[in-house]
Image 1 (cartoon, rainbow, N blue to C red):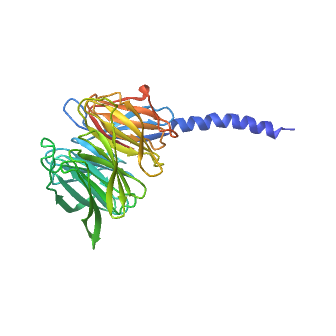
Image 2: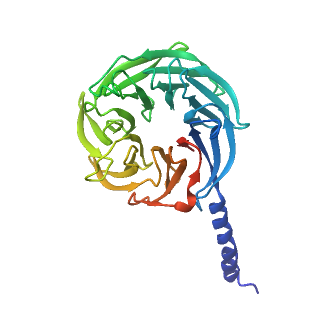
Length: 366
């Protein structure tokens, strides 16, 4: 007579290693935006990332000029081409082929964002100091330019803030608001995208004044969009702004540098973990570090750690979909550093064996 209990144990013993093997073998596509050159990168670099091992395997290059910042929706990839005459390019990832392109009407576009609730995307033109709204077709391709804003602003840093520099535009989770960082004017504008008939436009509803000379670059938002965490490029800091009734109050300014640091700042990117418990920010310049902050109950931040990125000029950072790792693009040292991330404490540990060598990486998305 067969002992079914023993048979079950044997079966599970055979099954568990197979399941573990399947989990460690699962891969996620990794897309890296770069600055291109005759001797370096030729476009968007595509990798397979294995969460189980942390290893990334190069797959292909999607050729285009200076695709510095990327966004993706399903099988469609969007890239800004950061040149004097800025462009936005659309790629069908099923065959890695460009299917559309339009001018951004501004020099050096450096950021692109897709609305979560409307068929539109927004491009920030850094040198041009402008913001461009595009509508999308049903297949995800570009439809047309819908709206354009030319900003006129300045602030106290005469070298970096003699005019407006629009560095990014981030949608709230529900798509109702758009937070636009003007590094040149020390302002974060808040817009809504309005639909009228078949057209779309921007409507400004508010603004946030950042510290003078700070230079806001990127932001992340709390789930209710009533707390804004802004990375300040020129001072290498993170500022917390909280909505109190009808006003925005600057409740904190925290460093992205160790105590006693002396040197040039270059606050670059900021991200929040999917559970909204931790915020991470990078500082390039002479610092070359990544900071971890814990989000407290009142939505203010507590600085937990600052660690070297292991490279030179950390630009973009991103958190893997399972939250187990953080990737940091080091532009000047031509590498992507990978950190193991403790999902409970937020702590980071360099994973040197997972480092990716790539020419002038700027942006990294999944």
